[in-house]
Image (spheres, rainbow, N blue to C red):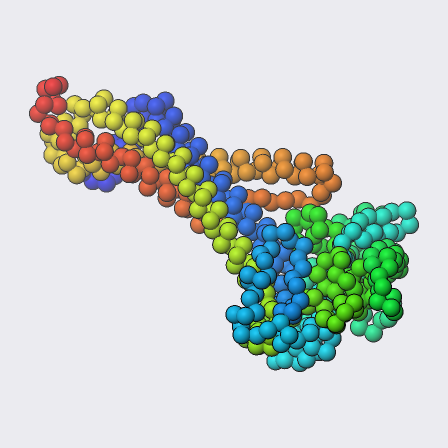
Length: 452
């Protein structure tokens, strides 16, 4: 039998029981749509998680600290540094690890392939104020040469970066903060003066601690757009020059995050610093050199790989759930085709009596299965898109009600996922059609024509 004739017969067979076929296709549609939307959601979350790494251009950064320095992290899920960085495994004692101070950073900055080296400062719960408008924010330190080293330079939407020759405090703020401070947009914010109020412990000359509050007047020189979705810390982060932050209360003792200098006891330098390489290809070589110097290192690339490993597991898990749904839908295909075999018993006998082979009959019913799976897969794409569209609207409406203005795109449907969904639903349908097709091929034409 010719292929076009088999296709016509398959379409004719499906049209005989339109309601049954429609329900079967709907079952495949729901299953394929579930698979499509769940994997698309995982891919969307992965894209959102990876966006800050790429937008901020952090893949060239190496975080360093002395092995004699206990690790401080704002993340409670960070592994125990003693497990990750066992000094004895390197054959070095804690005393042999150099102090991360300005002298060492200057030395590192002169290494081939290094663009910049600077201490890592981060202070939380800082009040930024302009007139009667105020907001809590996080302050991080960045080198004045930020435009030269290329860190996050693609995010600037108004103004410029720090002036290398300026002595007065300058600040970069995020675009969502302009509205909170009563400023009419990013362009209007440039040149305005804000006051940062920082509280924390500092040390006197006798090395005793005292709690101090400092107000710092700074000029807004630039406004940046944080990576989307701009939620929480991403939307409420202020950037100050590193040299200004060195004397801010709370920084000197690391009481508000990583990046501190110990003045009570033996000098131990900064707890953490950032080394930025010129090109991604320099990362491994520079990191190995830093390890040889006795420093503890951690790269953003390594953190990103850990993140991707988690999302691979999540993708597989959600795909497995979707596969179970398709397997259930396959039972509907088996039922539909078996009923079709029973109802077309004499018709199949006629086909075989006029010359159709067993293989032709198998191909006929497999073609019907392919059509059920293919159209169900296409319906799944439409259903998945519609559901994701509705969910994104609902999530963004809720987010705006909570004060988050930036739109969030939680789903990602690349072309390969669409093709894979249709192909997989078709494959499941073909496998489901094997048994009915073989059963139809075993029909005896003589008995079928007699109606036995």
